[in-house]
Amino acid sequence: MPLSALGHLSGHPGIDRLRLTSEPLRVNAVAPGPVWTPLIPSTMPPEKVESFGRNTPLGRAAQPVEMAGAFVFLASDAASYITGAIIPATGGRLM
Image (cartoon, rainbow, N blue to C red):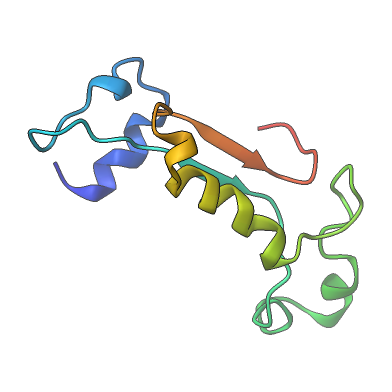
């Protein structure tokens, strides 16, 4: 199965049974909201940069370090029984 097909399966009820190898494959994701990176200023007009992320309930964009914990958790042994999960790191925006 091509990796691009995995995105299509994000809401599929059988995702926990997806097997591409003889071992079970865990498929999880982090759905980030606006994240401040050095590239943001080059992707929009200056007036938009000032307000980037203010439309979230937390009122600001995330810093990349604030996203790291979600990825580290999903890659850790603590998440060994989690599959088919999407962690919304959206600043409070509903998915």
